[in-house]
Image (cartoon, rainbow, N blue to C red; front, side, top):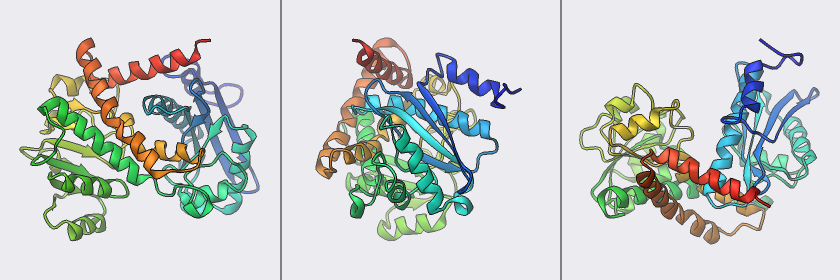
Length: 363
């Protein structure tokens, strides 16, 4: 069913429903000359201008694109709040196959739409967009981050994303085993691409035993060439069933934790870089019921957004790394509150983020 505009009624219901919606603004953008069709969703500006990346993806329907933008924008509000940033949450999606549709003309048109919001939304890279793309977008707007160092940006944010996940793992180890050291712990990393291979480096340096898997064989070969002691398995289904696995780190696609994976997990901790790891509501309770400690993904993978936010103030790597290091303390705070309130860590994290946004709205 659609309304008079042709938009899905379900999407509009999500937009205005208080528990999953509450978005401040949604902008539909179209430039016929370049083929641009985009959605910019601003969930909250309570803590400051909305910040979140631009996803370029061939969505099955336009309604699916709007729904994804809404969900991602809401997630960014929570991520930015718990990262201690002076930013609210926003996200944009460009509809289409980036391999065939992306062009300079399209990216410039998109930049003009971002600029038209007057700083209410700050964009960055996401799936399907890269540093070089943000350099083009930035030619039309000052509100583009994730640019190359040559163009005043910080470049690839995967280094600090991996560092933040590592801090989340250290906090998990401290909470569960009484020490932040990962020495001797067996850690399984699913996905050793941009973020995952940096994470493996931190783990090896800390003395962990590491097993990896990736759909790209060349990514596994690169890891094993650098670290011959790292072992590899065929797929994630094998990885999560390894006996004696201490920590599982999903670092690839979302939805890694669901009805088919949680029951067979051997790990005692889940802490990884992938976004939206919980396949559906209720998975956080399933993990808790199995005594699996879950470090909420949007908390531990915030190193990248910390980096791009810093570009607006003149990028300083050491300043960003120090802020990303505080992910350790934030993760411990979440675990403590979860214990006090008798809820899963994902619920505790949401409550802390919501509290911070509510306090910022007070006059």
